[in-house]
Image (cartoon, rainbow, N blue to C red; front, side, top):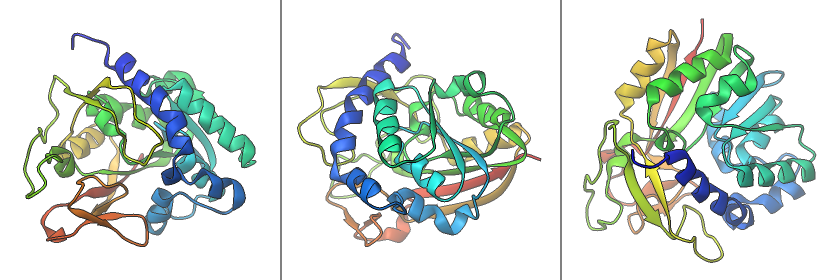
Length: 274
């Protein structure tokens, strides 16, 4: 890489943060008005999350904190970690206004152990749209394993690498346009829009992203000594990932209009540290 991907990506997320906080897609007003309101992502996760009461959890790549606060509302003692100071400013403001006891820490995900300490957490949570910003899934898996206490678990719901490999600009058919597997060099993008409705446009900024195959992700976690306890593939994803080919259901999940059985759109992976 000829440029620092973290500097490039941080500039993009710093710009997105206030726009996302103001977007109807993040439903900040409902978080403030309804003490028991949960993000759509966490509501989807509820059947698999189990009882979180009393657990010490960390949400890696937490962005503006809506999922982090939702997990705290389910009874976990949450810490959110993100590398974007603008995102964390929004997260702290939301937590303060919502009277949520959540700590937010600024650090790159690969520096999470140095920032937070080893073996401190019962739960590591990573949500949709996180792994694609990381060049090495092996390094991420080692970070997760080091953060977890013995008996602690990872809960990951993420967009499926098959979805990341599809070309969203081809609208009349599903077409592979990007690598399914992790590659040394990043995919380079420059976009004026984001995944939720925003007022205005982003100043075009370069981002660097990577895909990671499902087998690569599972193998990376197993190599750290974690035990896989669940892997579920889903036919939906919580944003309009393929415009013109998807419809939104009553749970704010987007599904293919035609032949939804043909491609997985997201997955939930759980693993435990023995």
